[in-house]
Image (cartoon, rainbow, N blue to C red):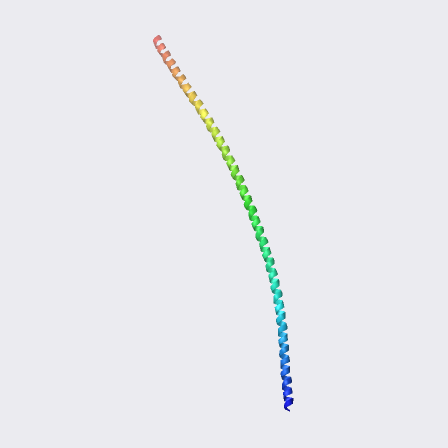
Length: 139
């Protein structure tokens, strides 16, 4: 009987062992499935991250290009405006100098006319005085 009990005990332990092995194999399979799934998710996430990095770099490059274009355009406009203002300043300066010269010429003519007028006035006053004296003599 002992042999039967040992055989039963052996069969029972063998069944438990088989059951544990099945559970372990099942868990191992699930672990490998989860590991493969995780690897796949990691690979997908890395691909997505690489794509997003590439997209980010392209966006940054577009913005840098746009900023450079805008900067160049603003510098060109500033240079054009500066050049135009310089030309306007030079034209205004030339106009000012021309008016100044014209005013000096007018002033010289006025001084000349004034001195001529004063000389003529003095001559006429002298003549008038002489005529007055002659009239006084005649009266």
